[in-house]
Structures are given as structure tokens and as C-alpha cells.
Amino acid sequence: MKFLFFNKEERHFRARVKAFADKVIAPKAEEVEKGMYPAPLLRKIGEAGFMKHLHPVEYGGTNKGVVHELIVAEEIAGVSAPTDMSRTASATLCAIPISRFGNDEQKKKYLTPLIKGEIIGAIGITEPNVGSDTAAMRTTAVRNGGEYVINGEKRFITNGADADIITLFAVNPEVAQKRGMSAFIFPTDTDGFKVEKIYGLMGMHGMRIAHLRFEDCRIPTENILDRDGMGFNILMDELNTERISIAGEMIGIARAAFQTAVKYSSERVQFNRPISAFEGINFKIADMATLLDAAELLTLRAARMVDNGDRASKESAMAKVFAVDNAFEICNQALQVLGGVGYTTEYPVERYLRDVRIGMIGGGTSEIMRFLIQREVYKEYGIKAELEKSAIPVPVPNPPRSKAEMQENTYS
Ligand SMILES: Cc1cc2nc3c(=O)[nH]c(=O)nc-3n(C[C@H](O)[C@H](O)[C@H](O)COP(=O)(O)OP(=O)(O)OC[C@H]3O[C@@H](n4cnc5c(N)ncnc54)[C@H](O)[C@@H]3O)c2cc1C
Image 1 (cartoon, protein in one colour):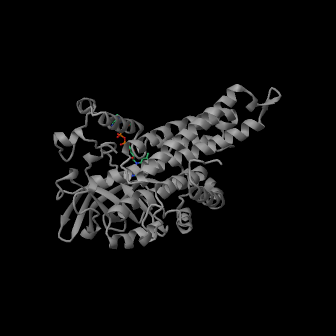
Image 2: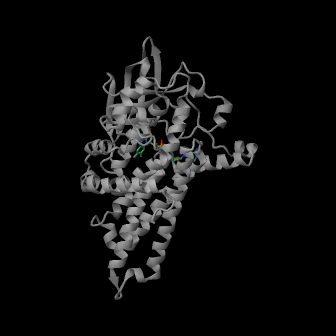
Image 3: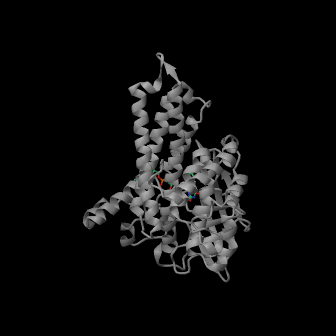
């Protein structure tokens, strides 16, 4: 009865993922928190078949769709969020462009091992000077005979130091349309590829994000994913599903914090009564429960829309911004319910609060999500002039963009 808004098959799938997460991932969560990169867990998730749902059956997937991705994200993140973020970087973010835009040969060679958990993937978008404004990308891919020569830098790349392949976005001067961007499958054993740094993180310990350098890296021309200058569209398509995954992960973390608070409040006695008897505590529990369900419903709507073939750019942005803002609030209130012990490492709630903070940044910041929502709302009301007036100024781009392009959305 708990998840009435999921159908029977989805509830069964959730039960399978939860049983796996409790048995296989949870016992390793502490080690991951202490800094263990979860490569062995990624392999086990792949072997269990929980990387297959977004990908076609003929390449080893189940093609079940984004609702299944949401369920996996919630259940695995609920026990080890950094493990799930490493999973999504590989089997979702890296794999979606290959799955949706790659050719038969690319899918056989890269997608199948990726979703079996045999190899690790990453996605390379962000650069030192390119964050929210992805269309200002500077890394270049210049064709030279049968090869593309890649030069540039990427930063904050999840799995970047550990990946076998990176779905890499770079400026392709041959592609005049779509902001000159192309997507490539970049094998990390290519000469000239260097991991410059692994960043220390506030939360999500165990997840590894890297600064990468590409110096005259030569990859075969057959590694390009889009022959028609579709790179920017590939990126936008991937981001819609990524935002739903992140919303799911944040819901999973928040639910774990909520469950800890519910249990603790019923056991902790002060003034001769369990603290759950006090309105100051039980109103918090009621609000947390309501916000959790609201976040779940918004995210489920976005997931179902993407599964139905809708663009769902506004709905995935709404799901992400609502889920992450409220997941942060829920973790914060859960810590408050635990009092002093909540601030210690005796309970995982302080970890949940640190982990959940990334949701407001990765996959597009909360400010950019709000911008996307506002833009779509104005479009729905046909208020084009107002939309243009309200467009956020874009810094001087590289490569140069036309005025018309700058008025379109270019935000990750
Ligand atoms: C843990 C972690 C994992 C990550 N994993 C990956 C990965 O795997 N691959 C990858 O490519 N990237 C990854 N990223 C990068 C992430 O996507 C970017 O950090 C994010 O898109 C924001 O870019 P930025 O950090 O450059 O911030 P900036 O774009 O410089 O933004 C700084 C601040 O300005 C605000 N801002 C910017 N423009 C506007 C505007 N027009 N209107 C209002 N506010 C604005 C932002 O919201 C933010 O608050 C990761 C980051 C982290 C921290």
C-alpha cells in the first residue's frame, strides 16, 4: 500500500532493488563513506541487472524506462548515495548518449559492457571556464584524416579518474549548426589523456570527481556520436533524464533521514514521554512525510512523461529543484529531531545532510532549473517578448554565437 502511485510491476521491481541494496550495498556503505571508490559495487549492480532499464534489449538492456531508473536511484542512494552517483555517471549519463544516438557498432562495443558493469563510464561536459553555460565550451575536437584530435580540459568529472570511456562533449569546427558541439566516445587509454587532480568533497565521500586534461589526444573518427551536428541536442536529451535520476537520489537520501527520525522520535524519552508526543516534533514528521510524497509525485510525473516520449524539460527541472530543496530541508529537520546525537557520526543523518547538498549543483544548479521552468511557463502563455526581456545575460561566448542563439536556452 505504501507506493500506490507506482504500479504493481514497479512495486515488485522496487522490492527487488531494495533487497539487493540492503544485502549487497548497505554492508559496504561505511567503507564507501571512508573513501573507498565503489568500483566492485558498480560491477555487482551491473551483474544484478540494475543498469539495464534505460537501454535497448538488443544490446543487453531491458528498455523498461525512466520510472525504473527513478526506483533504482532512490533505493541505492538510500543506502549509499555516492555509490549511486557513480552508477548513474556510468550507466545513465555516459550511456544514454550512446544508447540513443550511437550506431550499432558503438553500442555493441561500448554500451553492452557498460550496462553489464564490466567497464566504467563518465560524462565530460564541465570545464574550468564552462559550468552552467555549456554552449561556451572550449575543448576542441578537430578532424585530421581518420582521427579527431582532442585538446582541452574538463573538471568535476564523476568517475573521471576511473572510467574506461568518457562521453565527451567538445567544439567541432566542422559542425557549423547546433553551436558547433559534438559528442564523442573517448577511450581513456588514449595517449595525451591525463588525470590532473581528484577533488576533496564536502559529502558523497567515495565518489571521485576529477580534473582531466586532453593534449593532442587522437581518437578514430568512428568514435563520434553525431554525424549531423547534434551534439547540443544529445546533451540536452541526456540532462532531462539525469535530472530525474538526481531527484530520485535525493528522495532516497531524504527518505533514509526521515525513517531515522521517525524511529528515533518514538524511542527517545524526555519529560517522561517519547519526543514524538510533542507537537514540535510530530509536526516536523508530518511535514517531512508530505514533502517526500510531493517530491516523489513530481518526479514520477517527469519520469512517466519521458517514458511517453515527451520532452519534459520543465517537468524534470521542477522535479529536480523541488526534490533537492526539500531533501535538504528533510535531512536538516531529521537532524534536529535527533538533537545532539544527530550532529555526531553515531547516526548517518549528518552524512545525509552533507550528501544531499550536491543535488542543488550537479546536473544544472537550482538557479538554472528555475530559469528553465520560468522560460517554459512564459512560452506556454505565449509571452515571447517578456521571455526575451527576462533572459539571463550570457557572458561572451566561445565560440561566438549569434544573437538568436544567445536568446535560446544554453544552460546545463
Ligand atoms: C560532485 C560533483 C559532481 C559533478 N559531476 C560532473 C560530471 O560527471 N560531469 C560534468 O561534466 N560535470 C560534473 N559536475 C559539474 C556540475 O555540473 C557543475 O558544477 C554545475 O553545472 C555548475 O557549474 P559551475 O560549478 O561551473 O558553476 P557556475 O556555472 O559558475 O555557477 C556559479 C553560481 O552562479 C549561478 N549562475 C550561473 N549562471 C547563472 C544564471 N544565468 N542565472 C542565475 N544564476 C546563475 C549558479 O547557479 C551558481 O550558483 C559535477 C560537480 C560536482 C560538484
